[in-house]
Each structure stands twice: as C-alpha cells, then as structure tokens.
Image (tube, rainbow, N blue to C red; front, side):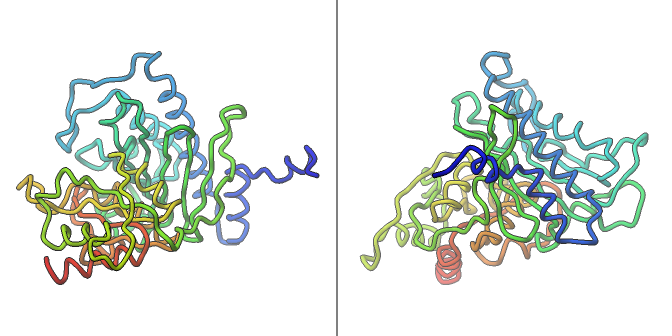
Length: 342
C-alpha cells in the first residue's frame, strides 16, 4: 500500500533533479544549473500564455515577416521576448541567437557577459497556433569560443558535438520539457496545480521496435529517388517486413516527441519544390542539431542523409538542412538508400 508520504517522497522536481546532476560534477559552478532553471521558467510563462491564447487576443499574425520569410505570429513574438528577457541580464551568457532574428542577439552593454551561448527557436510549429495544434520551444547551450567581451557569430556557429546541453518544451495536452546535458535524456511534465515541472520520464530510451514514420508526403513528388524508395521500404512495400504507420502533425517538436517515446523516424528531406532551398527546410542550429543531440542521448541517431547532424559544421546562423531522426537503424537505412539511389 502506497501512503501519501510515500507518494510525496517519489516526487522529483526539475530543480531537485538538476541540482542532483550538478552534485556529481564537483567542478560545476551552478551557472548552467541556473540557466536551465530560467529556460524551464520561460516554458512555464509561455505555456500559461498559450493555454489562454484565445482569451487574451494573442492568436494570429503580427503582420510582419521574420528572417525566414515567414509570417510572425503574436505568440512567436511573445515567446521570443520572454526567453530573451529572462536571460539578457544574468551574466551567464556571452550572446544569444534566435530563429526570429537575422543576426546574433548581443547582451546589452550595461550587463556583464558570461561563458555560455544560447540558441533557440522560441515557438516551433507556430503556423499551427490558430488551430490549437501542439507547438514547442527548442534550445541549445554551448560554451563560448571567444575568451571574453561581447559574444560573436563564431560563438554561435559550433558543431553539435560541442553542445553542453539541449532540449525542447512541447506545449500540448500537457506541457513537457525534455533535455540532456550529455548524460541521458530526461523528461519533465508541468503540473499546473503546483506550477512545477516534475520528473515523469527519466532516462528516456527510444523503443527498439518502432511504430511510426513521420513525413510530409504531400511533397513526395519533389523528393529524390532514394528518399522515395526509402519511404516505400518504411511502408513495407518490399514484402519483407511489416510497414510502419504514418503519423504526421506538421509541428516538428510534436512529431519528434511522439517518435522519441514510441519509436520511429521523422524526416524532412531536401526537395526540388523550392529552388531557393536546395538543402532542405529545417534550421540546422535551431532545430536539427538540438533534436539530434537529444535523440542520440536516448539511443537514437540523426543524419542529413549523408552524415551525422552533430558532425555538420554550421556556416551561417540560418543554415538549412535535411533531417532524418529517430531509431538508429531506420536513419542508417535512409542513408543507405540515398547513397545507392541519390
């Protein structure tokens, strides 16, 4: 029989979990711990606004376009400002970069700079906001490359193997934060009754038997021969295996999160539909790299179809990339099809 005191003893808040992880690293200063706290706080604030979106008149577009040429949603803007304002004055960061800004975001001169770099997509999948579909926040944390002073573009253009931490927050039927500091991937669900993220998915591992594949097959006619054959293989057209079921929300964080917990593969390959985007649609720094990091920490793998995402050297802030991410064997099979058929 489980008593109330037993149940309370089993509760682990995100604060307690992060502190326990920090204690295993005697050299830790607590700066990263506090940075992760602030990202969790940002998630709470954004979640509270999303759940009341229709009531506070922040659904819809601002009438502006971001650097990606996409219509900026009011919640996009709110999420972006929330993350920035929680982190610009703390002395922990050298520089920030956001999918919503063309250039790096400097720390104001009146505040001191720190040793970390924060990259973020404040509200991924925001085109779905008006339809009450799950959206998410994605973040990456690096050590700065420069020694001191204001952070630079160089500090932001780092390979995924150099990540200190990365994760995402999915705003759905519940709000869940998943992150890794390189020691496994761990999930926390927000309990709105107490306003705390509680450990709900410790040490996440992608199931060995996958259930789903996720892709926008409306663009299949624009895919390469290798990707089209790979899709047929996933569907079981070779007759040698049972096909996977298609599940596609159209919100990257939601699709990734489902496949992380159920097993499967998400892919958004390069296509010929838009000649201005020959290298894919998803952003390397703000989407592909942080989700690749989480996937590998959960036993999975991420690739651009030819090499590991975490080995790709970024050359610009808004560089785009194909992305295949999920169970390692499924992603490696995609690489095989692309090597053989293009």
